[in-house]
Image (tube, rainbow over all chains, first blue to last red; front, side, top):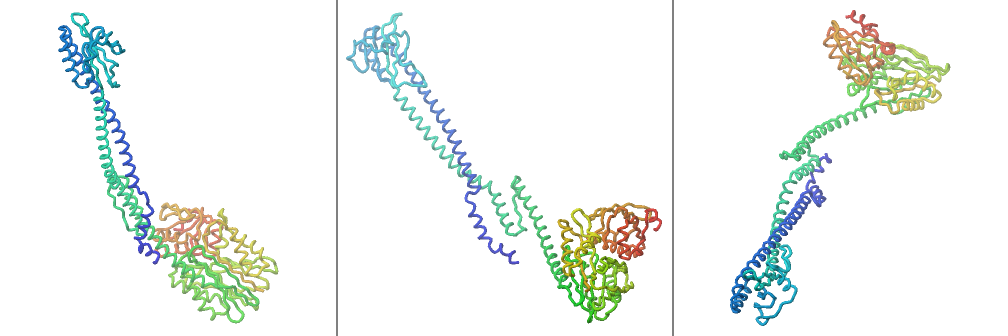
Length: 521
Length: 113
């Protein structure tokens, strides 16, 4: 009972102990995994988006620059042509200064067909100076619009020089040139990139924050059945087999809980069965103990006779019974009995036989048949002719060697006659007791000689089996007995039982074994 | 039907049920053997074919005695045939040869009904 209560007394402490052991639970691991996954995915997507958006922005700005350059140079060459033709330096200067104010324009120059400056947007003193730098040389040679360095929308140069010949009636009258700077574009691109990066960062942080909340919620939802299962198993482990786990999910967890509940039912049944068996076993153990106390606890040694006995029950209480006792001044009584069947009914018959025997033994000194008749009548009546036992009962006068005996369906009496060095088999007797109320048993007189010994055994000995299902047999028993014939009764019993044990080693036995040796000396 | 170490086949034959036993009638099947045949002996004549019974313990003889008793109480008959010498010897040792109707062959057994 204490053992059963123990776990119920301390459920709280056990629970805490269990929880302490779980450092990184499934929920924690699942959350971390989902969060890391979200961070990875968001970062990759943001990087791709950022790169692609900024590239597109850059391209758009480059195209805008290119368009502006072409429009401006067209405008410049067209308007400047009028001024060159009309030789109006002032108009030319106005035009140059006007164009110079266009966005991103660094300088505006109009030269004559030989590259002498006609007008310069930032330095009026350069008028008339011949431009000889490679850019100007290239512009001079080109017959159409030329952008230096070559315009590549994917790789914008910090400075551009765009030039266009100014023609009038098929003749080159000058060259229009505009210097462009990409500083603003670069600045814009940088701004755009910064903005995109900032936005991405906000998106990443926002997504991660949402992801954390979401993943914890998801993990909680997913691991809830696991927690329920763990809790259920914990309660179950404390011995509460009535506990059921209720997970209604139609998934693996639901299936697991159903299987678990089924197992609990089986375990409960099994436990009840075990308890019943335990009770039965305890009762059997008690009965076995009582039965053991009903047979002689030690060998009987008198001057002239030694009686030694041994009995082994295969399982629980058995049907074998043996006994020996002094009768009067010079006699010993010996009985061996094999009750058919086993368990409580057989034990009850055995106890009844013993009780009757001990009641009658002092009154009848010289007739085993009378005692057998009395016992048989009682047993047949009390057990309604349903319980039987074979028996061999003898009373030996150890002063004279005269023996009176009765056999009720038991194995024939076996005597070792020392004088002749051989076994004598005496087949006499009547039916077992318990079968017929009016059955009359008879006395048989046998004279023992000094040195003889009597062997009484139940068929559990002769029918003991070895591992190949061979029986020991009467013949083998005699051989074993012959081997130990010169020992005293106590040693003969021990040695024979030891040899029988060797013969049956490894094989399971079906019947109880009892052996008695009565040594007359 | 199988008890530990003993097979039992049943068939109807005229006024009786024939139970063909094969194996051993050991002490440890005493209760099961008895219980099985007691109910049968209440209901019909029984012929036990012992031709393939290699061994029977003295408890087995006790069981047969009880089955025979139940049969008699119910006005039924128990006939045993085909006993091998060792089984016959066991019955003789328990001095119960006269308690049973024992024949050598199945034909003789059927005539005893």
